Image 1 (cartoon, rainbow, N blue to C red):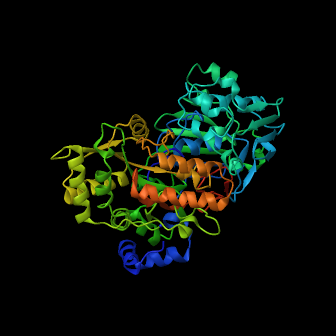
Image 2 (spheres, rainbow, N blue to C red):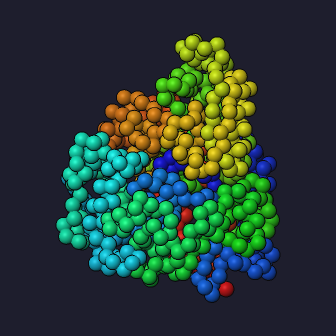
Image 3 (cartoon, rainbow, N blue to C red):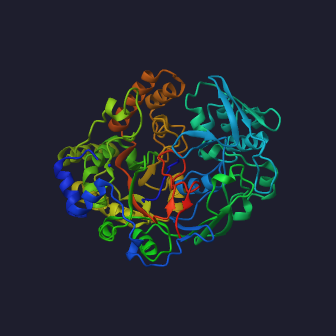
Length: 563
């Protein structure tokens, strides 16, 4: 999702790299992980009293990495808000437990190159008992493309007739190619074929909003629990900003029998892995991520260990606004040539499951016959300090500077963010004699500063909006609001347009291969790593779903086993 800028929560490596992992984690730990063994010996010894799972009340207590920055689905861009919205709202189509597309508010649909028709179920209800109608989708989608909304995801609707013209102020909002044919039929007109259109419908920007409720919030829609109307499996019943967000089962949800637990209580907000694992050890939360410091402890105590490849890519993005020195190609190449993703993964992060960054396109994406990255291998940029200094000299000459000014590196304020910014600060000082000023911000503020262009370099990331290479390929198109550094390459824009409109798989994949080449040779960013997650789950909690596209994690199908 947008930046699907996210908080910080890998395997075909050489024997030498594996030795580094073994040294960090321990031989026994790696063997246990690779075997995928899990034990449930009471988590911390078999006799603790846990509040993380309360079978009697059907309550699961969890933690959020941070305050959800934006719960207005037309303006939301981050993964935390997406996860929350995924539990309390539902679109026309949803993700099933196995990753398949499943009926949501729409019980059936038909999609052609020219458009789509969705038939809404009669029992879809808002949390006040009123029906969810096709008009609610028309209102929400019009709001998303309205230039007054300033939605960074307006572009995801541009395949709909007149969406782009409306967003650019050239057509009235009422001309959007979406129409309610009564309360239960939604008709969509497309300006180009979209072979992945059904997959798009899962994304939060396409969720419904009821007009009368939105207007009654007087500009505060999504700001508090009572400023939202819910049509998903849960409702937010308590939201203490910065401290707690409590969800309770929605009695009006059409598929309420699928929802087995009564309460999801996000009683803690923290991105500190050590604080979270302590909460887990004390029985206060049911799920916690692991880092290199506490992974050994988890192995020794034989906790159930899970691994998940998130499907996202983290990178260092450059600011291309004309007043920034990072507009210079030679400076960007110099920085690219001293960053070693292998070193970041194996010496800084030091946790199994992370892959060194090679491309904006992650390894899980499908290509024509196999995986995209197998069919179109990314050219690896090897560290080369000599060539980097030559590129730096060319940059100084073109910029007319004897010494470059300090560069601001924007990042999150979490523990991993601290380690990575310090590593990059020292690397760029040592190899290029660059002064890097670190600007650490809370998650929400980092997103705001990225949108404002208040950085030279920023550590960000992208989670896929839908399972197609285009969700990565168009990220640095000049028109994309999520292109926070304002990179502008006309050739890349042309290729994105081909990928958007072509229905031939081979043509699209060839196009993505060329986009990958451009992003390496004219870098708007430097890939750092593809994040994986190692985490523990209370063994009584069953049915947690992890997915690379769509909100993650998904607790809508969980159940409690045992006492």
